[in-house]
Image (cartoon, rainbow, N blue to C red; front, side, top):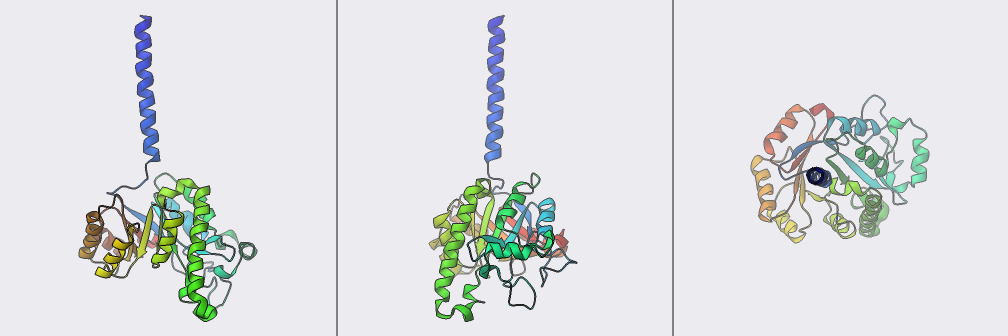
Length: 303
């Protein structure tokens, strides 16, 4: 009798252990699959504002938009830039205030940004990416599937008059600084690594990220049209496993072409991001276009 009870105990122990192990494996599995289509908050999920200090609106990339976005979307997209002392902050525009030459994230240190923040309430603060990572990891289950970072590097455009002949050098330096800063953050927050996409127009930036922090799950090239030249570029840089493209310029045929391209390239995982659904009509159009794996970036008003 004792022997039978012992056998029952052993069997139950094995079953419990197996179930626990399966549960752990499930938790460690990346939160998106090849069949997934999910909606993430564009700029956190707020709305476009010419002045980030507008007190009457929930503007993109500000604390209220990101906080609310992590409650109503399955993930978020934010725009990111690097400060003068190599800290990544959230912000889209060149200038932080309308009709002004400053302040500018690229030309401010983190200490100066903190000083600027002290003049405003928390809803108008310039958030560091580290703060956003913490919010992302504390989001409700199912609302932290993906955080997409749209990398802004203005040395090739807005700052040309300031850096003149050294613009290309400054641009390349910025690309590396961003990749190193991101690697430092992901070392501190490893849980984010398999839930992150980086996107940009600059293939060199994606190359730096792949070299310095290759574990970033999706490296997304932003494109205008899926041309043969783009396909050649993607075949040349095979670690680029994601395309980011405007909903407005994408047809169903083109979406199928992009998806088929990655499947024929036998990518184990890839992603197509469509931006931005600003209203319910845009969101429905995007839904009609997509097959997994894909994300649709949307403003709050689209839901």
